[in-house]
Image 1 (cartoon, rainbow over the protein chains, first blue to last red):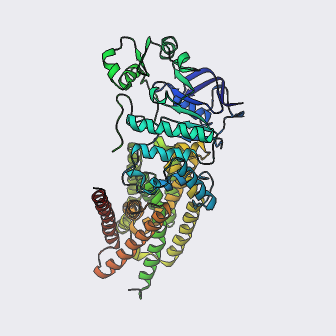
Image 2 (image 1 turned 60 degrees about the horizontal axis):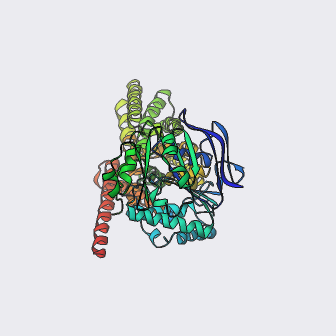
Image 3 (image 1 turned 90 degrees about the vertical axis):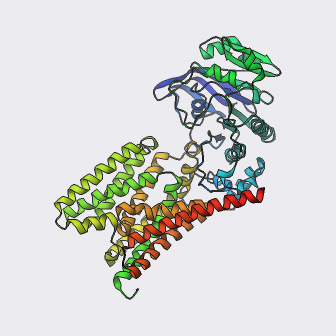
Length: 294
Length: 271
């Protein structure tokens, strides 16, 4: 039984078809990198697995069950939003708001709920961190808390939406290593969306690349090729491997700039024409990675 | 000063309103919906003046309008509810209608001032009981939705994925805000609802790290402002609404200063 399976799925956002004819099966225990340009449908695909976007056609199943809202088998980490500095709420209270969060009544956690919060905070090594106000934490620290929140109630499938966004490269590696170690320890399936493939290369099993209303799932060797990516971007794409990194760029790439850069510039270059009218809230990205960690 | 019946009524009414406005305001500020709360108060003005015209108590006109507007804003969803221009235009229109209705009411000036700026010393025992009933209802409703409300306010996408209807929660919450607004308007008037609902809550959010503590501090600060304002009004013979806004500003400024001071101290400790 697949952890996540799409059968001839078409997904639309605001009347516009984002993905069509998608067939894929992600097996339990896999670490999948979900890649694609802005507006290619990464978030929409994750939201469809959560039952928040109903497919126009086809069917989506999660561990054999039709995708539906409130599925306890899925842990979800949405794209992080900016937090006003005036909010002094502790990280622990922030994580705890999701425990039984859909139930009516007062948010007074019982002993079991408090123990569950401590368990997930320990898993990500944030028990001390969680005492501090959320607004005071660095981007990387905040991502750890969001990851802890996604681990509440022991999900078997983790859907992580751009956890590396606006983190500098060293913090990116920290988040990737943490997710990979959690995956090994807990035996969960991970679907990790990102803009850049390289930070995920050491830990991922397969890649799911979306673009041009299509999706390609397979090994890096099978998917990150000029033929497949040119089809997904709808424009000639070159793939350059150097020093254990993979750079993806639209035709006419400037090798001098790409070889000593961190890959983001070439990557942003490849995406720069794909900003057409999509709706990713809080998606202020492309170009060089911002260093959010103060 | 408690020898006077009108002062006792005023203190009772102020206490009820403060204990509702504080906790409701906490969630309003947490959700970043203070402008929507402000708009509800203005829209309530139309309801109150309309009630004058029809000869029913203004409290019920006010409540009816804020309730209807709150549910509509909530159901329209986040996209529309947070459009400043749309809300601004609607509330200007509401005030315009309120002014038109007042035009037809004979006792124009005193009624208008009382509605706009409050007249807590004129609260009668019947109104106190109405405020108590509405207050209990508002707090009970807030208690019933508090958990999904907190979840939806802090992590909307995740809450939605876990099965929380953001729209339902938004509509229910703004209905509760409508109750709190109608209450607060009895004390400080529709123009100054912010002072009881947002001032103490914003200060509490800056001062506390836990949700429970924040709600309690918001309620306590609102009570402090309302009672302090009444006492100062009694001593000085200046309007209670003025003193409440003055205390609200003072409390908020103190909270901001305390935050900056703490940040400086923390930086010093780390260095």
